[in-house]
Image (cartoon, rainbow, N blue to C red; front, side, top):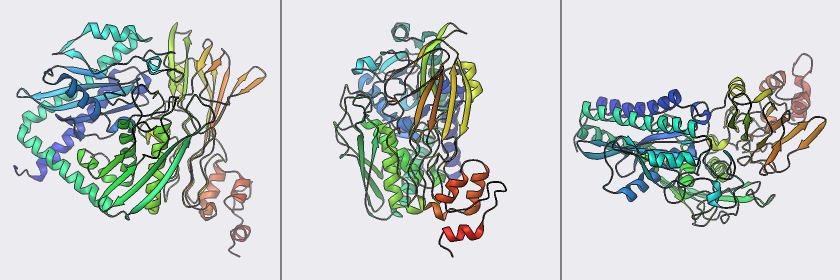
Length: 580
């Protein structure tokens, strides 16, 4: 192997990372879909010619690693019929490893000296993909009703758009003009990365670049193995439940994980999870692997965060059982895979690793509360699909720190952003009237979770529907760690004139009228450590900031505070805490 100096390795490594980030910037500057532009519901990176991950600097956890599956599917289907200038597309969850049908993945091969050397890939969630309802796919009775299935296809052939295929896709989409723009933006991001990568190969030479890539993978594997070798050997178990599967209301779906740590390797076994369901919560193995591994990354050295690649995966083994809710068979309903069962996978991995590494514990996040409104916008006379993470409450506590506030749901691990209320009101006919933290809405602990969120808005458009398929946590709670309280439950209701209509089952389509006020209250995540061990000064500041009531301070945190001056009554506090 050619010996490369450290500066060249570092320069090449960071150049590849930079190319990936420029892919994201290309999307953000050219797309119009709010999911891509504002929420950053994206995953992207560079893979080698065999589909091994070279650079995956960041991305939605369900897609962070899973793009290797669509790449390998393209390789299998097209074989030698892959040429410079081609761009491939798929959304197939079963034969190509996509997340679910509204997740469109675009793959661009990179050739150098007439040799296929790399792939670049970009995936995002689109606002419509056909199916039973506009933008909504949670009430489908079979996989076809969930949306248009697109097997791996060659959408661009040798630099020329295949208008016949594009026309077929857009003819099955309710937002064809928007999606034509989005497709061009997504393709542009991959071809931009292709151009930049070829420039890198021209600058340093193919042999040098690939020697650097091999060294990057070797170093990353070594670093991850060194981290795992510090973990205590043993077996740790956890389970987590969804409220239901979207069809059998009130019947929880259970995900179970057994972690086996041995030496410098870790196995996460999900085989004992429930059988796949009739409803839309199932997930394929590609999503299971990606979400589990992305959660593990939280427990590794933060300096590795942006540099994970195929080397990171070698010491980590994700085991499943075909036919289970974590590894479903072809034709299963998978619409809510990343939000519901995916979120429970994240929660299980957080729990088993928090047991193994108590000084790095991470408590459960709040249940996902992602809104989806579908209707007619009288301002534009067009259909709109409003997908919002704004009501999501925030993160669970981390050992030593309170939970991160304004965090999108746990299944995103902080990658997805929230839109500003002002932007949402410009884009969609909903006037936001309240968007605030709620008092006493968090999971208490020595380190508390983020507080819950109240989101309230008026429908200023026509009658519409509300689809809360990706919501959960109306009945189930995520556990705290080391004596911390669990996450709080979610609730929502509609105010229609003098009537208040409580939403009892979020997975049932809600018919909303013009002028309705939609109110949702999302409970916060879970805490870590006993609440009565929290720093009294931190409790005092929470009371002052109206995150904690005087009553909760006294009854839960055992801190007595003057409601007028916010001073701590030291003697009374010590007595409550058993100090005197």
